[in-house]
Amino acid sequence: MQLTPEQERILQTDGNLVINAVAGSGKTTTLIAYAGTRPAQSRILYLAFNRTVRAEAQQKFAAAGLSNVTVATAHSLAFDYVVKRSNYQVVAGYKSYELCGLLGIDTGDRHTDFIIGNHVGKFISYFCNSAVLKVQQLNYADVISDAKAKIFVDNFYSLIEQFTREALAKMDKGEIAITHDFYLKKFQLSQPVLPYDYILFDEGQDASGAMLAVFLQQPAIRVITGDVHQQIYGWRYAVNSLQQVDFPMYPLSSSFRFDEEIALVANKLLGWKKHLQQPPAVKITGAGQPGGMVHTRATLGRTNFSLLLNAIAQWQQGGLSKIYFEGNISSYTFAEEGASLYDVLSLYNGKTGAIKDKLIADMGSITALEAYIEKTEDHSLGIMVEVVKEFGNRLPGLISELKSNHTTVKEEADMIFSTVHRCKGMEYDEVTLLKDFITEEKLKQYIAQSGGDAMTPVMHNRLAEEVNILYVAVTRAKQRLRLPPEINPLQSIELAGQPMMAAARAAYPHPFRSNDYQHSAADEPMTPSRKAFSSGKAPNSGKRWNAEDLELLEQLYLNGSGLKAMAAALARGEKAVQMKLVSLGLIEEDEYL
Image 1 (cartoon, helix red, strand yellow):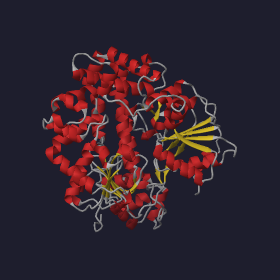
Image 2: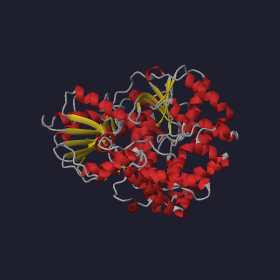
Image 3: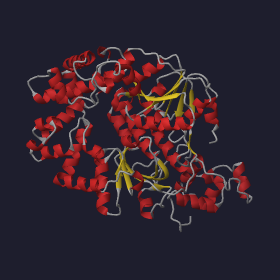
Image 4: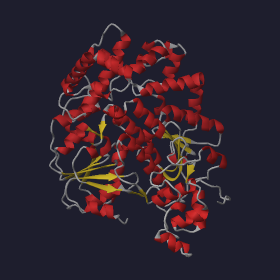
């Protein structure tokens, strides 16, 4: 593969650096090339984000003949250093009622106990993922945004902190099984020195503070890679490592996944961060080739609720024979702590005897469960309540029907369904987004409601992350991107697909407004390129359309410019401009301006 000038510049460095790589920009290819240009005797560690990425990276580095590269995840590294050298037992995590039993949480009110247990579990995770040395150095209340949950935490803070410290002490002594977060924290606190000359830290925008601390204390040459705008795991207490270090930053701004039309949407979405005083780190260029075949189609939602709702609707409409859910369909029917949709449905129907999950069974009613959700910020459980209220007793049959037509081979599916968090790192030929993502108007409303410039850091970060989630969703598309007009920053019904219908154009007459163009191009002075074109020559004829061309074309069209005026302003042929307007969905194929 021919490397870009940006990639070549990275290969020529030999010190600590940050690589800010936009979606689809060939980050892994760059890292493999970087490793291949280091001295043959170099010991190189590549830290992958999860096991799936680790397995893929192992294959790619091996195929490149780089036997001096060790591929690991942060947790696998910590497991080898901590768990394998001890008698610790490991569990995936603790449920609220389990922590109540293990720690003897007993206030006299069982529901209060469960809520305290929930916050203790989250405080354990918050501390273990942080870089601090002691629990007392953190204020757990700082990461609570819901008003009712914050009031509860403030009222019971001393108890929550006490039980958090007790749980960590019991894990450290081996009295109870340790969590994955705990052995990562213990690894950080042991201040390990890793035997490598180079460490390549991937997906740095979603790193834990604990792992970043380990990384920064190493004597090796350190390279952090990622995309500052793809941080979507702040709710797991991740930190954006790319912005936490003072290493020189090198961009990878050209995406080979999609073309300029999708890149234009991505840039416009990131432009929303101006409301949060966070300008985009780099402008994305679409270097992909348009017009390819569409083999994989995906529907992406922000939440499980909207996704299940849409999957059921699409299935009932017909036209789909096989479907696929990223992460397995069963994972969409369970909350974080393990409660299932079926348990919530049984509670909804008052059939507590049929409930398997102890926490749900002890709630007694949906009203009590909703009160618990409000005081714990348990959004996954809240979504399940919404699903149950929407479908009621039809739910088991509908889920069963989806499962019976679910294929385990993604490529066989007529439609792939996924939330953004489950499809991060994936790509599809055609992507359709649901309506449950943030919009620019909602973003501005939330900022105003949260105090504007005086909003808390946790709310500021959460709103920025909502924009990131939409950006990640959009950049999964390779060929076609279908957006609801409420979300589309250009407000056209579809890009790179079927043209916009006349009725839709009338309903949404202003795809976007640009601060760069406040008047018609017909009022602009004639530039050299326009003079050349006026004499019969089209200087840009046959040239690739870039983001600036597309933005100007959209604005000229909205300002009512005719076909001849638009062609003159862009120094292109009238037929080429007409075809581009069709491809953008602004006019029908048989429509002339």
